[in-house]
Length: 144
Image 1 (cartoon, rainbow, N blue to C red):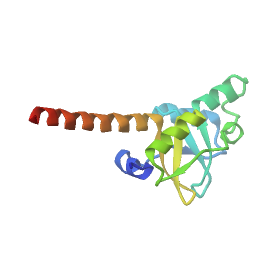
Image 2 (cartoon, one colour):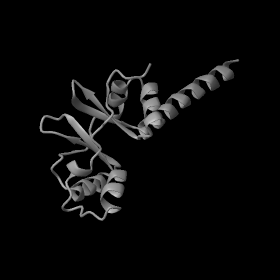
Image 3 (cartoon, rainbow, N blue to C red):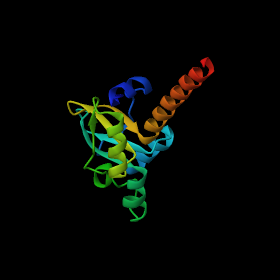
């Protein structure tokens, strides 16, 4: 069964992060520059302390009329972050995302961030697996 760690080995482990004391404006610039929808908020030791998504910025900053320059990430991030370890099966990650209605799950090893898996990553992995299955079946049919 494919695991989070195996997927990270294939896709890469780079994760865009930000510290809680940075401004929401800084966070938005990073997300915009990297064309991503969320940042993992980490402390000085690399432990996950929150996550900041585009939706957090929209609902907790823009819609409330707060200043992105003067609002810290700490005050608007989601603190109750669902994380998984590298041994978590991809099917379990997908189920968690569906049940919790989230699109990103940080992957940790002994509380230290090692990667991030998005619903897009899972969809791409499924697409590749289905393509491989179809190719195998087509080959089998041609042999017959």
